[in-house]
Length: 331
Image 1 (cartoon, rainbow, N blue to C red):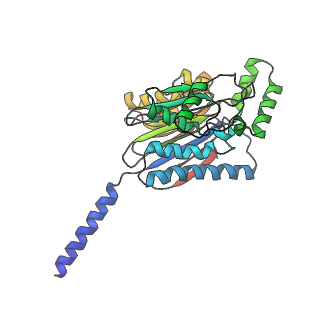
Image 2: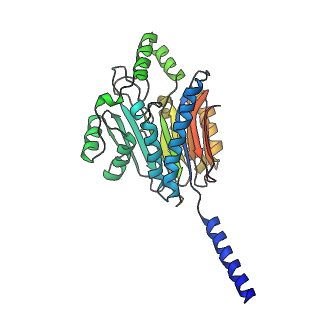
Image 3: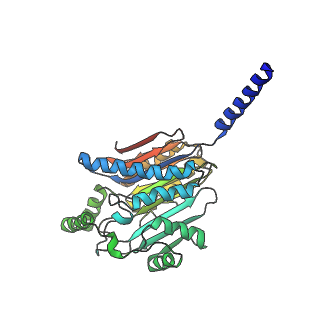
């Protein structure tokens, strides 16, 4: 009897161990803009950044540990950042040269390769939800401008007045940009030296699927109607279960020209590079050589995380497959 009981306990223990070890890992990684001039922000401001990054990570991770999808986790994390005035997305979006707020976002499912995006929207509280709705409710990949705003109303997304996006510090940034503007070349250089507070997320869920999303207000003083890399699949966002999920931040024109997010995926698939090798090559060599500033975050289906950037700072953080949470700003 004693031997039978011992055997039963060992059997149960073994089954529990197998169940635990077989449980697939979940992970999440985010960014909230790259840039900077090498000057650290005040300690109280830095604390706000770390706290908001942590809230975003926890929001996305909470979805994952409840066996929610990577797509759901990406949206949950990005919404936290879109609702903050700290970052250049949603509520904290920068102003165009015409004094308007035009927001872009995209999302992609690594399992199906389905994707959705919106560009130049002006009344959608959370553009990342609009991007997801485009993916789920239309046969298209991107909707832009008034058409995207109208679509968001039709599908019941939260709509806000344009003044919702007004923040005093973003308006002051526009005034400073206008004051500094001398030539087109000089003004563009000034823009690349500031924090480009685009937000993004990549997540791995319990089914082994990955997804990525990105949301932004673009560049301070951008020409009316300009759309950067953030809503462009393969440039600012990409996800493929056979390689990785990537979200980008930086001077978008360079990320578009070099299809940065897809290039990282392609290097993994066709050159057998790791996600770390691929991201480092693209960010530190391809982008740098072209004059592009910025960074990427991403992960693969094994939970390997990358956060690569060529600027003095990039707001970033992750919760890895072991549950470790980490946030950082500077190199």
